[in-house]
Every structure is written in structure tokens, then in C-alpha cells.
Image 1 (cartoon, helix red, strand yellow):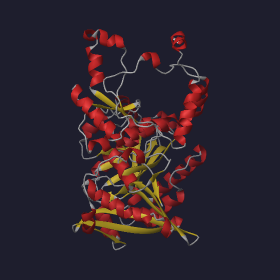
Image 2 (image 1 turned 30 degrees about the horizontal axis):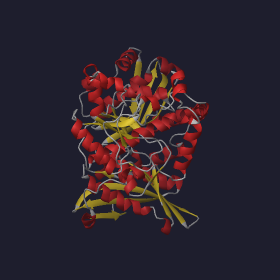
Image 3 (image 1 turned 180 degrees about the horizontal axis):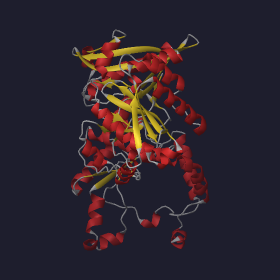
Image 4 (image 1 turned 30 degrees about the vertical axis):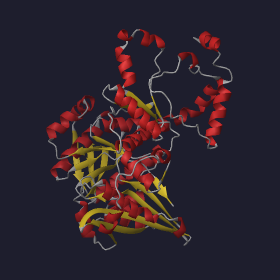
Length: 502
């Protein structure tokens, strides 16, 4: 194969040509778009790129190894953006098989094997400025014996592809998006009231939220205020006189001249609302980031990772942060216990069964003894493992600021009078979240964590809570913990990420 490419003479100065092309692209020069590209004509294999790694490519690949996970995530995000951009104006089909172990090379769209429709869409997208292409380039031999390659030809003629290169910016991707609806007239119907709500009213609204989180709860905001000197603003959004969303904004002044605003896991919508209403809410919140007023907004929105969310953030002129987006899973406590147990991964369920045979006893409560025992074990864990989670001072402050309803629920596994494992669950609204845990050496042998997590589900369900969040899943930094939580087969979700605006 190498001899073939040497014979056709396609490898001379290949690396230098590529570097020059990338340099010009970095300087802002773009290839002139050719609107006369043929849909049906394939590039000859005689002029295809050299299929072997050059010395330059090998050196570059070594430098990129640590970035591969980030590049994969960026490609997935870009595919979601293209899906959203195209869905507003064009008709197509996709087969998005969500998989943790598969990263798309290109964004694929197909048209039921109809070559005329595919070719028309190819020309339309090309004219509208999209980086559309066909794939693969079939060699002439395929068309010489059509009857033997009907499937390959049908696939080639019924699919179009868009680039999802990791360096492709969302701003570039949405510049050709067609405006579908003018929402300016709805601004007059939206209203937000700041700091006019009592704790009781906030907690009542919180209970109406299907899957709330600790970070937007009253007690968490109050604890950040007392513990870390943040000021708290709490807002209630109404649309046509109906309460639709709540948000807790943290505020801190820098040198008295610059303000930092932080919204973490908010706003929270009381019910499912139209995407245009969501846009109005985020437009209002985006005003906190204003360079002329000397303020920056740091936003981790409670928006699932999809193209609609990413496009919305860009339209609101937010910039993406490089920090990892939040991933977790929640257990639907409205489902039957037998169903939830059968839904566990078989290996996880077997370990749970083994733990139940190990003479473990369960202690449950919110009293000071269990809380301070858990706090000591957490302090020991963070010191030995050298990792940072929620601070000990914040846990103490939340404990002190809770009202008549306890925020923390502690479950402890005891084996022959010895405490071998424990977990702390945060209660917020009608939901709960796994917050911190400790598992000793004996606890690991006895599968005490399986025992505690399953009994958490039982206890929370008995107490009337509707959902149980597993408290974060990070398959890169803590793969063992991630595998353990994923074994519970909860409803996994990814949030859109961290953003900022000046």
C-alpha cells in the first residue's frame, strides 16, 4: 500500500502542506466555498490522502493523548448543536445511539434511501453555508458492478454528514440558523421579584420541583452567606401571573468595585415550560454579567446537555468554561421497590444479596451523635485520600441553619458492634441527594455500601420522597465510584456545563 502512494506521488511535502493550511486557518483565512460541488461524484482513490502516520502526526498525537476525552466530549456536544440547528429548518432522520464508549467522527443525517431528496438537501445545505459532505468516496469498481454493491451505494446516496471537529465553535455553527419565532413581545409578560420571599414560601415552592438540588435550597444559600461571606439573592419568576421558576444567586464584591455573581444548578422551573419562556428567564439572568457595570456572572445552569441548551447559552452571549460538566443519575422513588431491585445491575444485585447475609445491622437518624460520627469519618477520608468535596465548615453550617425539618439523614452499617460504613444524604424539597460517605476496610469486604445505598432507597421511599440523586458520577477521576453508582441503573443525566458572561 505504501508503494502505491509513493507511485502516485501524493505524499510529497504532505506534512508541510498540512501545517501551512492549519496556520492560515488559525489566522482567519477560510477556504472559499464551492457551491458547485457534485453530490454524486466521488473523489478518486488515486488522489486520497496518505493513510499512514507521518513523523509530525506522531509527535502531535503524543501531545494530544491527555486531551482525547475532552476532544470526544466536544465532538458529542457539536453533534448535538448541529441536530438543534438543523431541526428548526430542515427535515431529516438520525440514529443517535447514546453510548459511553462511542465517539462520532461526523454528524450523520439520512433520508430514507431517497437519492433525489438527499441530493436536494445537499445542495440546500451547501447554499445555506453548512459544511456538508458525502461519505464514503466509493471507488469506480463499485459502480462497475452495481448489482453486487447495492447496499453500499444506497447508504452512500441516502446520507449526508456535517463536520463536528473539536475546534468548531458553537458561534460559527449557529450563524446560519434561521430565526423561528420573535419572543420580544413576551418580555412584557415576564416578571421577577427579588428577595420578597420568606423561607417558608421558598421551601413550599421547592417541594413542587420534580428533581430539585441542594445548591438552590434556602439552607444552602444561608450557609454560604454565613460561612463564606456570599450575599444571597432569591428570585421568583412569573409569566402571565403564574409562578414558573425560582433562582438563588450568590453575590460577592471584589475590592468594592467589581462584583461576582454565581448561579449553581439554577434556575429551577416549577413545571415544564415552553423553550421560549426559558429563553426569557435566562435572558433576564444574563444581565448579571455586565462589563460596563463591573460584574461577571458564573453560571452552571440546571439544563440537560442537548443542542437546545448549548445554542441558548450562546445566544445569551455566554462563554463556555473548560471545567467538566456535572453528570449524575437519580432513582425514581415513585416506582415499586421490587421493580427498583430487579432493575439493579445483576452483579450489583448479587453483591447486595451477599451483604444482606453478612449480619449487618442498620442505624438511621439525624441526631448529633450520628452526624458528628459521619463528620469525623469524612474528615479522615478527605485527609487520607487528598481530595476536595464539600467543606467540613459548610456541613456544620448547614446543620446549624436547618429548620424544624432535618437537612441530613445518616445511615450507618454496624457489624458485631463495630461501625464499618456510613453515608450522609441531603434532603431538599421532595428530593434527596447522596452527599458524602465512608467505607472502612471491613465494610468493603462486607459490601456495606451496597447495603447502605439500597436501604437509603427503602427509607427515602417510606418517608415520601420522590427522587434520590446519586450525587455525581465522574468516570475519569473516580472510575471505581462511578462504576458502583452506575450499577444501580438510575436515570443518568448530563448537564450542559459551566458558563460565564461579562
